[in-house]
Length: 413
Image (tube, rainbow, N blue to C red; front, side, top):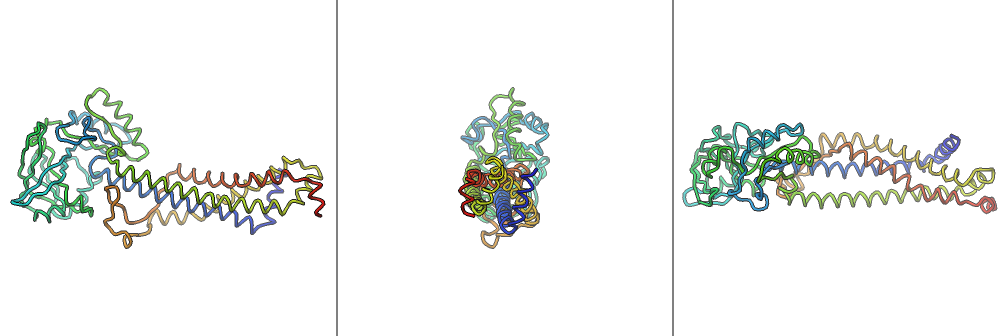
């Protein structure tokens, strides 16, 4: 208790130095929250966007389909798979889909692309990026009908408009070429030219017939979770539930979207490296301040030890000062960061003037508005790291103070 009072007197005696040190900690917290929060928001946004473009956060697929996509590899018993997925509390949606390559033609013009066959009665815009991007017409109503929703880029290439016919040519499960005549009922525009020029939505029931699939066959079941941190758990639980079924695999988004996963991993590494360097600079500043404080008080420590204070108590005194500087820094950090975080999480900074509205990375569109999103675990790590750096910066000055020789220090008086 006595050491605690002495520490507070020392901090109060050097208010300016104490405030500068504490504000250094607070500024470090602000930077860490900004770096981590912007990363978490952009990563989550990109992963969710990639997921709603087809494969979901977790994908149940025919074995080998992810490595070598082909319509010959089909998933059977999709109804059972979907029911098993929807039975998990972490799952917000599960959709049976067929995805594959096709040729789209009108008259003398033709382009290659990808189709996604969906059930119009089950699909929701929340989990289907193309539904929420329809700018003309609507999604087909009949899963066994001949409707088609095409991208705006493909509509331009093939001179398509609502009501016009387009021929879809695919290779069925037996490797035979087969064609189907469809009619455009909708046009979507995602903003990504490669997607808008090469993607078409088709009815699931009709494509099953075209591909000679069974009534419960598809290439995948896309599963969506309520929290990206639950992906591994959902994969484990779903694998256990479907253990009795052969010829399928349950994959997380990292495996179905490897380009995006690689991009995020590299970006996250640089983010952590930058934070580490900033932390080192701030820690060095705190160390310098603490060390200067100790050197200026050499005679003071000598007198303390001359009247009976032990070296251990002197070390403890300096560490207690570091402790309270850390606590004050955390409080100032919370006060300084809270309004900034609230503004950035709700409003953000629009960067569209610099990167454009249609900027994409890793194959998915990037939100041009920079916002912050921080998980509780991340916030706790930031606070503990800032406090830990403050305490670590006080260790050497404390040891230096504890080695003060009373006789030598008193000679300077």
